[in-house]
Structure formats: C-alpha cells, structure tokens
Image 1 (cartoon, rainbow over the protein chains, first blue to last red):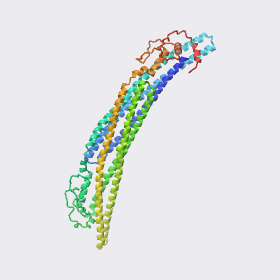
Image 2 (tube, chains in turn brown, blue):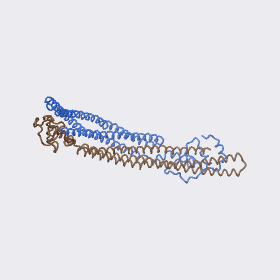
Image 3 (cartoon, each protein chain N blue to C red):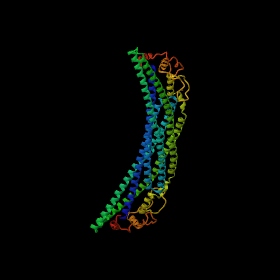
Image 4 (tube, rainbow over the protein chains, first blue to last red):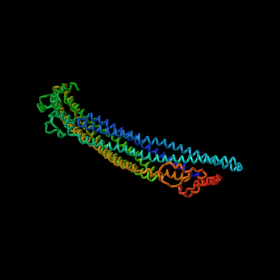
Length: 297
Length: 297
C-alpha cells in the first residue's frame, strides 16, 4: 500500500501548495484592495482640500487668490494622478489577483477529482482482498476483481500525473503572475510618485513666487488702513512699508472724525483730503443727534 | 452717528476677516489632519502587506524567497518614508495650523474688547442726549456728560486703532503662515514621493532580476516532478526545460510503481534508478495485501 500512501502524501503536498497560494494570494488581494481604497480616500480628502482652497482663494486678494488657485490646481493634478493610480491598481493588480482565486478553485477541483479516483482504486483493492479471503477458490471472480483493481490503478496513475502537471503549471503560473503583479504594482506606484514629484515641484515654485508684500499693500489689510486713515487722521494714499499707521499724525477727537467722515460721504474712503485737523470747536456734539436718527444702513 | 456706523462696519469687516480665517484655517487643519491620518492608514496597510510577503517568502523556494524578501524590504522602506512624512506633516503643517487657531482666538478677544469700548461710547452719547432733552439748562451736568462722551470717543479711537493694528498684523501673519505651511506641506510631500520613486526603482529591479526558471528547476514544483518520476517511471534527475513530463516514457501500472516505490524506501525520491519498467508480471497483486496491512504512516 506504499504507493497509495506515497500518492496520498503527494496529493496532500499539492493540496498544501494550493492552499498556501490561496491563503497568501487571498491576503495579498484583500490587502492591496484595502491599500487601493485607502489611496482613494486620501485622494478624496485632498480633493476636499482643493475645494476649500479655491473657496478660500475667492475671499482673498488678487496675488494670494492667484497663488492659492495655482496651488489648488497642482494639488488637484496630483489627485488626478492618484485617481489614475487607483484605477490602474484595480485593473492590473487587484483584478489579476481575483482571477487567480478562480484558478486556485479550478486546481482545487482537480485535486478533489484525483482523490476520488484514488479512493476508487483503494475500494477496488479492498474488494479484491475480501474476495480472496472469502472465496479464494473463485478464480473467475478474483480475476475480474484483479482486472478492476488494475484498471483503477491505471486511472489513478493517469489522474495523479494529470494533477502533477496541473499543479506544475499552477506553480509556474503562480511565480509568473506574482512577478508580473508586483512589477505592475511597483510600476504604477513609481509612475504616480514621479508625477507627484513633478507637480509638487511646480507647486513649490508657485508658493515661492507669491508676492506677499503686494498683497499687504493692496489688500484687505490696507483697506483697513485706508479706512482707518480716512476716519482717524491720515487718509493719504501712500505705499505701506510697515504695518503700523504713523504715530506722528495728530489724534483727532470723535467730533472731528464725524465731520471728516461726513465730508467723505459718497467718496471712496482713504481719499486725498486732509481736512481732519480743522476746527475742533466748530462742530457741536448736538449734531450727533440728527445723525443718530439717520438710516443705520 | 456716521463715525459710529463706519467704525461699526469696519469692526464687522475685521470680524469677517478673522471669522473667514478661522473658518478656512480650521478646515485646512482638519482636512490636513485627516489627510495625514489616511496616509498613516495607507502605511499600516502596506506594513501588513510587508508582513504577509515575508511570511509567504518563508514558504517559498530560495530564489523567490530572496526576491520577495527584498521586495518586502523595499516596500517597508517606503513605509518608513511615509512614517517620516506623517510625522513631519504633524509637526510642520498641522501643529502650526492648530497654533493659528489660538492666534485667531486672541484676535477675536481683541475685537470683543474693542466692541465693548465702542458700546461704552454709544452709551455716553445717549446719556448726553437724554440729559440735553430732559435738562437742557443744566450746563454743568451737560458739560460733564460731554467730557465723558469725549473721553469715551478717545478710548474708542485708541481701541479701534489698536484693533486695526492687531488685525493688520494678523493678516500679515496669516499670509506668511499660509505660504510657509503650504510650502512645508509641498516640501514634505515632494521629499516623500522622491524617496518612494528611488526605492520603487530598486524594487522594480529586484523583481526584474528574479530568475523564475531556477525556481522551476529546483523548487517545490520539481520536487513533485521528481517524485512523480520516482513513482511513475522517469526518475532520472535532469534539468527541466518544460513543465510537462516527457510523454514518451512508458506508462507503468500501479504494481510496478509499488515495487519501485518500495525499492526506494529510505532513499531520496527522484534518485538515479531506472528499474521501473522491469517485470510487470513479477509482482503479484497479492503482495498488496501485506502492504495494505503495513503502517499507514
């Protein structure tokens, strides 16, 4: 019965090979699918950031707006490449690994079939044994049983050899697939990272080129200064080289500011007039009453 | 009251600036924190893949084992760089954005304080108005109220100017921080992607260099073949250049195989013997009986 035992352990070894492949390829497949999903989530998160950056850019001054928009566009470009990465991982890594699962099932079915054939042989041999013990003189029956047992043995050998060939092919395919799938994985990742380096280099330049001083001169912040000057004393439009309004300008009272603000009604704040220091006494506080009753908007 | 209205709208504009910054910087912070967490998860997933690859390598033939191990090491190296990316994003992007939140709170507190001072001025002015209407002849009271109102106006102007300076500084800081934070983000990403390209290039080479044929010759699969040959007829050890056993070898019956397997007991399968084709008739099937009763293991 050693041939049966040997074949048995051989089939078990083949089963192990297939089970091993099933186990690891299954894990590779699920881990890489998860890796791809997580990459897609990273892309989604960066896309949200792009959206917020563009929203934010629209609330900012021209220089910053342009800079942030360019930066957001570059960031969006990286996400496009990430999307391509995700699609290619799905097509060239995950799909083949899934297909591999089907191949494993087929090989497993082949093993099962082979085991059935092997079991049939054992049955035939057992039948023959029984016959020999029970009716050792019935040569015809024994001869028939011997023929059946031999036929079963031939079947088993053929089936086992077929199985060996199948598992051989399976093993070779496994090695080839493994190399191809991981090479594709590496290529896809490499292309994505290379593109990202390229785009981020441009984004870095965009941020480096941002002329902060220009925004500080023309921006919201200098709108404040212009208004402040308009109201509080130094309305002349001059380039701002520091962030603090000049402290040397005389500090007017509220009544003065009221007058100068009134005088500027219908004009741009921060105009050329410089009349704020006139006549502290000329405008009585009573005037405030009428203004208080005026429209608040 | 136009000065109050103007100041009111000015403070509102400053509030909007701060609110805007709070809103967008808050979103940038939470999106980039989420981006960083998702990057960390991608790293975790790839680390799991590395672990599985090493486990798998240990079950494989030397060539594949070495290849997969090298590949796993490269993949692990990319994750080390990803880990550095995560740490640097936390330190140079997320932390500054969080700190920015504290700065916004301080500016918001300054605005609140300024509004309190402005409201006090309005109260003083209202008090003065009431006094003028109720007791227009009480010159002393009116004079006192006028002084208080003027003092409140001075306070308001000072406070508003201080606020303008604060918001100016806040704006400038915002622009500088924004540029620095996003530049750091881009640099961190760029460094990571560049390192990844470098490591994956090496990984690609590793996979390209994998000598699949050597594994097919010495591996598990040829163990099968050796055994197969041992049992089924062609036990000569020769280099395998195809995956199919030569079909020209005569196909022995189970009885022959039984003998040759028995003859090889204690020897390596796939030895040099070539006696399988001998004496089909010499080994009667009866012998199987004894073998059947032998130890099954």
